[in-house]
Image (cartoon, rainbow, N blue to C red; front, side, top):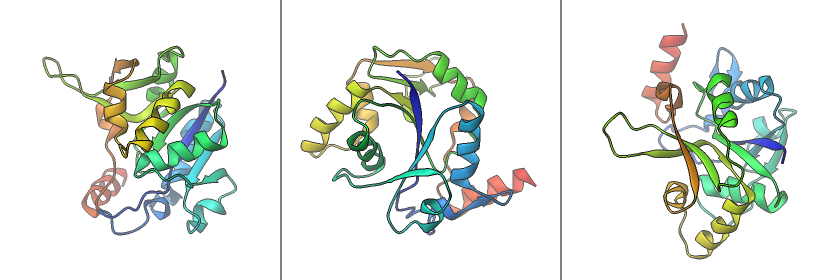
Length: 194
């Protein structure tokens, strides 16, 4: 089954205090920087967003509107599944601007389509396993479980991963998975880029 990429742009960005989809790195919106890494891999890219996110909607990229009753990142993932129920998705969040094609390529190479998901573990040696939801590949069977989770008012993707048949692989570049959540995170990122 063909894999498509989904960039979750519709979050509230409450810790940042400004919509992260409007933030720029080297003059490029966060979502566009991530989309270009995915373009390099030849993956079709879809942006999940709110109706009021004009920069995303008018970007020229394919997009879908968050229309699920789920909360958090699950809202965008479930919205994508409602539009494309048989689709497998490589999912990232809009604030993962450090991620690059090498890491995404590794995830794709290790994809196990008969598992419900393929995700990275960021634990250090001799630590308890700590799988993270993003970036992650989610098969159509994962979304069947997601619907049940939503119906039960449970919106933790990580918890779903822990309870499902997921392929969990070690992450060789955990520093590339750091989210940019606060103005301080953004300042650090921009200082390193200059």
